[in-house]
Length: 412
Image (cartoon, helix red, strand yellow):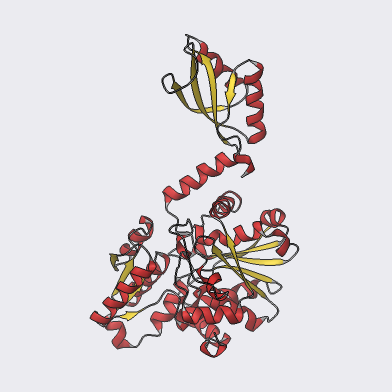
């Protein structure tokens, strides 16, 4: 697609920054010593998850709303979104006295739905994804005369999102690469235009979920084929925008794909190391940096933590699964004599091995063991895989039959 269709300029982005400066705080941008040691690059994090609504979307939404003439503000706006754009539009529309209707896919995380309603917007849950929600929002816009605030394929939105790059380069002008989440492409389009405008040699790399590689496929001229679900639902976009596809084709150097396990690990890493909560979409940049160490090794790399609106049940599952993969939460199955005192002996051995027992399941019926034996499953907290091995060795030396159902998790 030709560059003539891309009309957003560095000047537009600078004007957008001036427009929002009194309404939005500049989010922190900081060097991470620990992540730099882990990845081999010098890592600088832009904490867009610290906006009031928890994501970068406030920038573009505010620029778009401020650009509307009085007659359009009076009638109201409509937006379709999986959550972050919805909250941003609802919040700033409420601040500006603009009626807002938000169409969200039925399976949007509840935390995002409730927060959007709390900002006074009318929320309509429709469709299984953004495509169906978008079609319905366009229908309502025509019927009710509402102004559509598109989540990404809009020049005002793109200009607003590009202000992130201005702030990052103002704080760290020596940055050599920016790694940016990609869904519909509004964020990376604005960031790339701003970054390349200020520093033409800057590398801008996008990251998508391997289950939703729509922009990667579109830029390669491939048919767009996506999965059904991803932990990075904020970038689960099946239809790239026309404006953003043109901008990405012109300004973005590459798009990388990361799988679900890598995204999970990045969410947990940011929580544990940086003490910051980031949703799946906001963690894909770190996932790519960890997976593609050689590509970024020794370079100064900026990561945009685009949002922090993660469902608590999802976050809980990520933490639990991460503990299992690292061996800090382990299942240990032990065959014990089915007689008084036998269980107590195993418990004492586990205590001596400094395993903290979380749960015990005693199984007699659903087992192939001989009748004098029972199978006992222990869920234990440990200090990691080496500790698990020491616990197993202690049980082996006491001549118990031991099985670790999750013993291969450390190889994932």
